[in-house]
Length: 119
Image 1: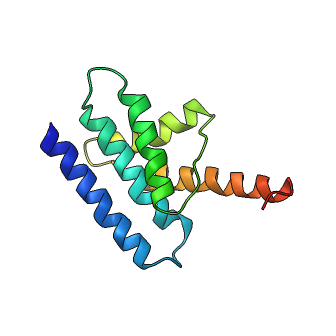
Image 2 (image 1 turned 45 degrees about the horizontal axis):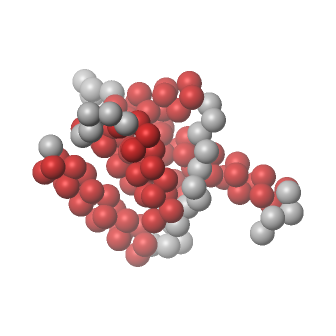
């Protein structure tokens, strides 16, 4: 298990370096490595307890590392649907729907901040 988690983290770190190199890229490019990290850690299920909570913290760290915002995911059913696509086996797996969902939540938070007069 430690090797599997180490591999997941190394993949994320490589993606983060690539994302930093292309800082003008769209938000989806920042959320894709974070979505992949989140789903892969959840799939690995490395802990006896608290995998969901711990992986959610890892997701938030990943988003911040990639220059995105800490994001709230209040719609549990929507989150689970998008996460399900990332965890799906048998050829239907895709991290992109989860990445798009995260990007939409981040953009909504940014838009809310602009409407509230925050900068």
